[in-house]
Length: 425
Image (tube, rainbow, N blue to C red):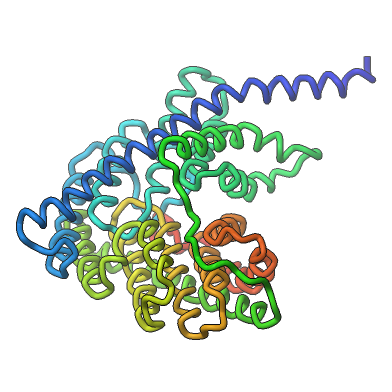
């Protein structure tokens, strides 16, 4: 009997994992559909606000005047919604991360409404944080009703994996992000993969759903990387470290800007003023510094020589200021996609400054550095930087460059605050 116990334990473990497949697939598909639905709705509203309406008024859609008016109006509208809806569209976004405990389900409608308004109105934040929060809340609420004894951590992992898989178009991103938190659990050999089994299935379902329906692509189609050399090794370390330092400057400014906006106290006033600041920044940096940044980085990378080094640097600085403003004054949204824009602009600035640095290498290293500082997620940073250039020859240099980048950011404050406004470490 004793000799059979390991086999029985393995069989029980396999059955337990097998039972996860159906809920994981359902949650993954549903998470992708929520993301897709919100994205499509925001895109339609964006077309109305930035094309149809200004054309009807005979105003340039991306004129300085329209950017200032539209961002200010967006802040006012979102402030009124947050002030009015039940639950005020969730907690202060400066205190939340990418994966948090479930929100009450009655908060989700207001959260999704303000997310659509922010995405359509040109706010420099991505959809990842609010959509992940919404999917976690819905999966937890429905899952606990279908299976009351199921631990909350399971639904959180499935929903976050499904959403992250859909956002990046691959379950690898979800597995890498979740592995950083799950790896600390230790256990027997294979325990990590046991814990990742359900989330990986959810991430695959979310990624496949999004790929089949929307065909997302992160490849910037930059000129092919010719291959590493000693000069590239030095360039990769310098660019990654410089980008990480800019990201750290953003992190250190975060609590001070948050405190300044919160002296206004009223959410409508905070968001209206924040929208006005974003409009002024958009007028300064141009329309490419608006919105979440994913479409805009493709426009930048389509012509790496189309702007001067100074123009790329200016766009990176303006987008950095816009990210800090939007994330501290109360707009709901994520910081990954705006950080990617900052990294791409910095990388192209480095290429424009030193033409011998290949644009693919410069962009990947700059994105790596900024994301290391802003997200404090090493695997996510490496993965995103590599996916943007889609060239495996860059990977060894990215791995080496990540080491000094990580030494710069580790132990520093995070771009997230405690409820009392102090930085999270």
